[in-house]
Image (spheres, rainbow, N blue to C red):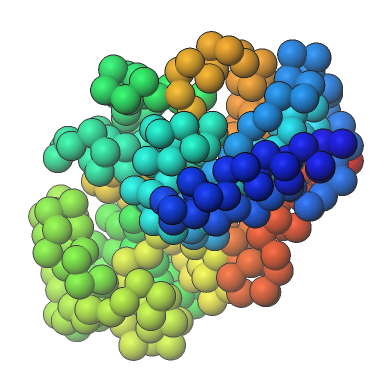
Amino acid sequence: MKRFKAILGAALLTTSLTACGLDVNAALPYDVKPGSIRPVPSLDGVDIAVGSKDFTENIILGYMAELALSAAGADITDLTNISGSNSARQALINGQIDISWEYTGTAWISYQGNTEPIPDEKAQFDAAKAADEAQFGITWLDYSPVNDTYAFATTEAYARQHNLRSNSDMTEFLKQHPEQAIFCVETEFASRQDGMPGVQRTYGFPTTEVKTFGTGAIYSAVASGTCNFGEIFTTDGRIAGLNLRVLADDKRFFPQYNAAVTMKKEFLDAHPAVRGVLEPVAKALDNQQMIELCKQVDVDGRDAGEVARDWMVAKGFIQ
C-alpha cells in the first residue's frame, strides 16, 4: 500500500515537477523494516517528498533520509538527484519537496548573500539556521560531523615521506623545499579570496607553479605526480580510491560546510517527530565514513541507494 501511494503521489506531481527540472523517481525501491528507528504513530502514512542535489554525497544522504522515514512509517516520494543546487533549493522553498540536506557554508554564502564565512562549525550552523528561518521560513535539524569543505591533499606516500599532516606542516616543508611547491587547483579556486589567494596569505606557503584543472582531474593529477598538492573536497570518494591524504586545515581558513537536514518550518511544526528520526542518522556520520560511501559509488560503481541502505543496516537503524 505504501508503495502504491508513493507511486500515485509521484504521478500526480510529475507534470509540475518535470516543468521545473525535477525527475520523479516515484517510490523508494527497498523493503525497509524498523531497526533502532521504530515506527512513529504520528508519521504513519504521512506523505513526505525527499529531494537531493545531483552529486554523489547528497544523493546518498537523501536516500538515508528516505530509508529512515520509511522505517518510521512515512510514505516516501523519492526526488533525489535534482539537477543543480539552486533547483533543489527552489524545490524546497516552493514546497515541491519537503526535506533535503543542505550545507551550512552553501546557505550562508550562496543563498543568504554573505561574503565572510564563520570559521567555527557550530557558530556557522547557528548563523545559517537563524538566517534561513528569518529570510525563507526554512529550518534546520542539528548538523552532522560530515563537513564537505575545501582542503589540500597529497598522496599517502608523499605525505609519509615528508611527515605531512596539516597545512602548517606543508608550509614548513615548502619553505625549505620551494621547488616542491607545485599545486593543482580549479580555475575559480585560483582567484577566489576564499580559495588560493586567501589560504596562501593565511599560511604563507610559497608556490613554484600553480596548474589549473577541472575538479575531477585534480585527484588523478595528484595521484599521478603531476602536482604534489591539489585542492579537493573533503568527502570525495576519490580520496580513498586514489589513496590520497587530506591535510588538516589547522588554521581553519576554509568555510565550514557541515551537512544538515532542512525543511520548511511549517512542515517541522506539523511533524516534529521527524527530528527524532533523522538527527541520530546525521550524528552517526563523519567524513571518513562518507569518503568510503562515496568511493563505493564513484570508484566501485555501486548504486547510491544500495550503499545508503547497507550503511543504515550496518548501523542498526533499519533491517
